[in-house]
Image 1 (tube, rainbow, N blue to C red):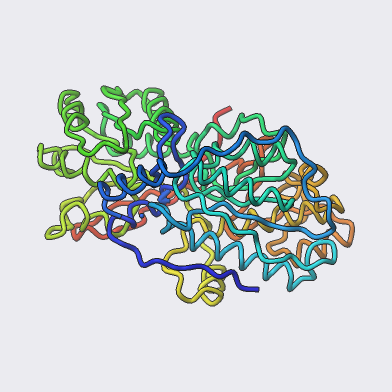
Image 2 (spheres, rainbow, N blue to C red; image 1 turned 90 degrees about the vertical axis):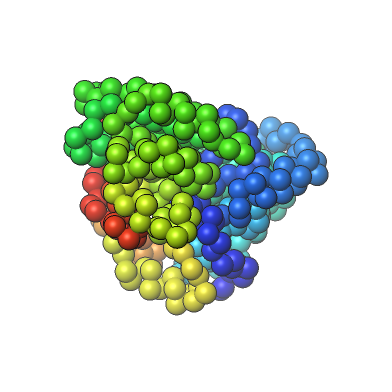
Length: 451
């Protein structure tokens, strides 16, 4: 089974949003979102605003629902097919398609073939994401994959879980979800930014910096990662001279750059999506270059094209800039398989995590003997830890049929879900831009929750 998608080539600024889906806005609620992991900023803002004005408000979610009452496990997805995040849709949609193909090759879920997913476009707009979720929920799926952006997930999670349908995101990293009241029906295979922040802070301190300015998007992703980073910096003995959020929809960021200058830091952290290129341009014009101060980003700025976007004629202007981002396990077999399944795919970011969303939920249904999320939600955490290790739906399903407890180690690596239904550990990549402005992976670090 092949999921049909319309793949878009990566425009320059789109590349900056490759990792940005991980976190989207809670405050302020905006219509344009990047994590990561998408069009020129001003044009995109105007288009998104106009589109949002034309979108009617969705009705409030129904109070409760029966979930999937059929015998067939059915997926829906709310992922970006249009809007600034359209760049992020294909790897996640195709990964879901590959997972369904692998599940069906192993006999389906509880003996029934899984149909093609019910498609929905989050479109970078809360109202559009809500309408897509409502339409999918009317068909009583077992699970919805998505949204890509944390803000879009926050816009639909009550609808989905209130209908007794499970929601799994492969790219939400906002810390908000860890303690969210979801009745065990929201899970994610991407790690919380509460795990990324300390790695970013340690990287800065280990590089010898002690007076750090942080500027971040004023949304759930930016605020959450900024706070996690600031706390870890202070715990390590560094001074946070500035921790400021900004409106990501602003047309210029002179005030942000002025705040950084006034703080007189020896290192600057920019937690941004595509608008981060403008902030970096302003910093560099003000003399805050990587030669003068430490310059750091996070997953939203992890892009091979960042140097040429900041300065097309001199991509090496960002040489020495570092950052962190959630890393997938080194899994060339999965990437090769995905590229064979979707040969036109240009990016694979978050594809392993989405694949693991689908397989984890399908395995939980096998253990529970039910395709209704109200029944299989209790099995989700257990299939990812403390059992016999297995690495595919087919292998894990065979162990379940033999009466064994399983520990699914997925395409993105070991999951080991906590009680909150999210990875208990995270592998975080430290990246750096070399003299030519090319993106290099420096190392990967395992991050664990602070007890």
